[in-house]
Image (cartoon, rainbow, N blue to C red; front, side, top):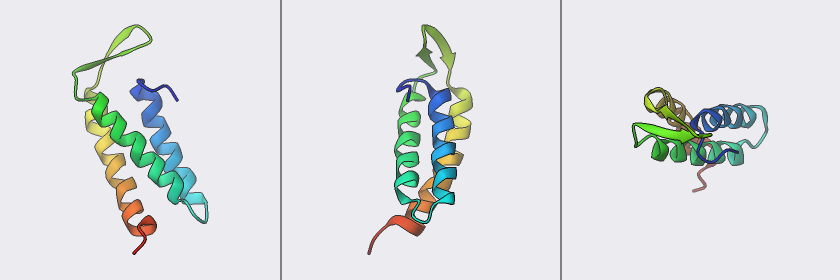
Length: 83
């Protein structure tokens, strides 16, 4: 994955989440989606991020990624945490 491209990382969160939904044990995918989502949150602490030499605003990710991350975290809590 492109480590500093929030567009690619946001897509990865959704794809990993969806893959986890289709598998009998989706936990590894949910956990990876959670990790990627947290990385995007770190990237969006700045107002812009440099992607392929261009400065891109992060506002849209500040609004959308917490929603996706909340959904994935709920799945990790519900299905993946071992007692």
